[in-house]
Image 1: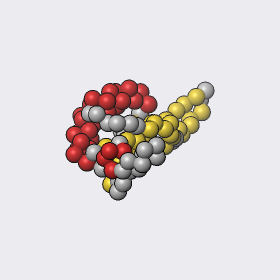
Image 2: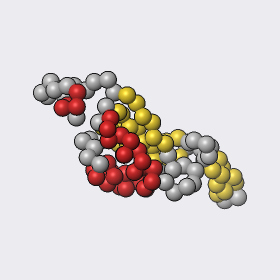
Image 3: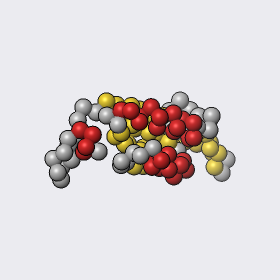
Image 4: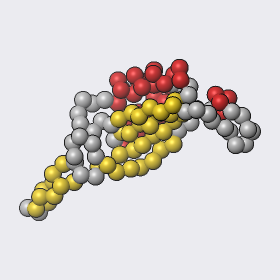
Length: 112
């Protein structure tokens, strides 16, 4: 099993949810976060004063998926979400050793 941690712009969330649904991801967790990457934010001028805005709104979507479907999900997300500009986001991939469903005690893939 693989855990996908996908960080994107908030306006791309609905597209990402559609992709995960179409790829049969069994569940997801969404967190609103703030941060910056290579672009280090941007400069804004307000009433003649220049401000550095370096914490940008992002959305973190986490999902644990079967190892076999992780690569296809990653490829689809990169193809559909990418605009070619800074700030499109990142995907972090982690190995998941085991999963236990608390309600039934099922383990492994059956618990997803």
